[in-house]
Length: 153
Length: 153
DNA sequence: TTGCGTGCAAACGCTTTGCATATTA
DNA sequence: TAATATGCAAAGCGTTTGCACGCAA
Image (cartoon, rainbow over all chains, first blue to last red; front, top):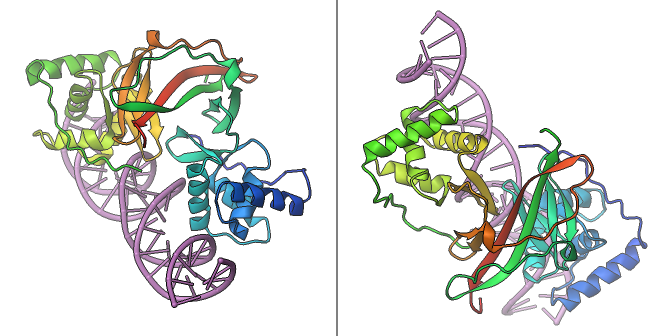
């Protein structure tokens, strides 16, 4: 089980933070989520671009900023975002959940050595029909996970 | 997050235990695993038929038998079996790993409410080609997980 | 004032580890 | 005898929960 201690960094070279915060706050409003400072900051980080971050990574990036956000709030907020459809939980590693800010339909490569996710465009994978869901059940979501590793691991 | 406290039971109405143990011991031998009593018992339970059990469920079934097996041994053994290809780890729930005794290629329905896995035959899902694995990487395994829930969840 | 959001610390649950004992080859 | 396996309890780690405080409607 690889331990990824890759240092985190908020290397978003995008618009000025203030503008990003406004954008983030609008997204929260649209999702019916009260845009508190902590939530706006987390949204700003996570929704800046399509990416896959664990709660720990989000917490680490937050620590580099001015606003202090507790661990519990990070977990609560990420859970809330996921419930409201702002991000998607990606479950590929038993030791942690990744939050994916790319909400369009797509799939993933998962590098089991670096614990890193990479998107696979939905158009690049055809999934032929699969059997009907069990009686009384409806399909919630289909995940395709392609686990990769270094040659001759 | 649904809590499944479904009681466990070793309802294998198959061959007599003694014969099953012999079979299990042979499988362990073939995999180069020393067939100790604990390992044989776990193999007997898990490999009796295609099924998906969590470590906790295995532990629970073991408690109903005569042989006592510690929690640590269950985890060590399941991890060893997975490493040697006797079972497959199925990661669909952040809170626990399932061990799948069906090693032929196939995929899964996962009922997020009952935390239950059901096989989907590999032949029933066509996966059109996906992009090449990232540079220097090889595909280890492709998982398709169809998450299902009750109608109008 | 009523409710919601936050921070903190403690609790939780699954899994792993350390070490002494027991078993296997 | 040398190496491996087991049991037990404790430690780890990601995540959740309980509760008091703070702030907005």
